[in-house]
Length: 335
Image 1 (cartoon, rainbow, N blue to C red):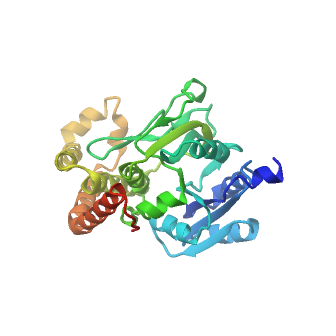
Image 2 (tube, helix red, strand yellow):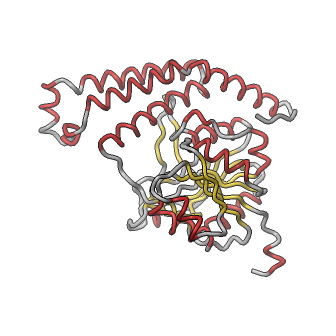
Image 3 (cartoon, rainbow, N blue to C red):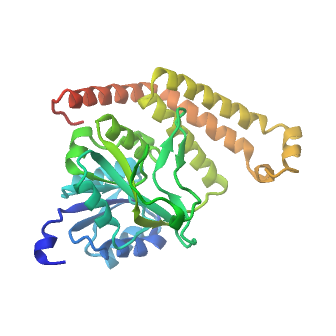
């Protein structure tokens, strides 16, 4: 790539939210620094890690901009990074346990540059250490707020490589002007849901959200157990309900609340000794080993959080609707 060609590539700010991921940061940051795209700034926002992550980045990756923060959520950390960034384009939600292929960003940029109707673009995530098994190639959103990964479990070689529209992206490249128009991420999600919510806002602003499978990253998929799994369930359920309350129609909100109550009923039903005994002898025996009381507790806690914070969600919904209406009418405005 010649110097003149390099000047054709605008600065891209890659923002990473990190909390206690020291064991993955070396491979993550090395892959980003080794990409073929010639003009990047990498920003790591560390949310008060206790495993030495911040010190590790500081000592081993002087080219990476490190921002130390208190214990904050992913959305808030990314917003801190966006405010500190200088790029004409921004990558949000690149995971600290993710590794980029050399051409990942170039592939995304070439498609985005030639497609003004695309507001956000992301690639395919391959499960780290697998035989090229897809973790996700974008995602789908269902009427009750549930999120599912497209392509999960399929062989990458057999998956179609044509870019396609998706409901949401876990990691996305956007032009700065899109961020300026629709605002920063919603920090109330803490973890989970902030990416889906932002994708919805991009689409509501009149743009498309696209996955380009030929742009590859490798994701170190981990599975939570014990209290960590219960905490994960709490934030997932909390995010699912809030996504619909903030972005859905009246009918979707009604279905979502009914679905949430149904899930809580199922969690409670699973506590019955007779049902547990039947489960222990079935192919769902793994449920028998779970802390079902803890699971029920997290589901109820997630519902209560949304009820207590209903006024906050309604204010955000109104503010978002007002901004998007101003965008569609051609006037300017930034959250």
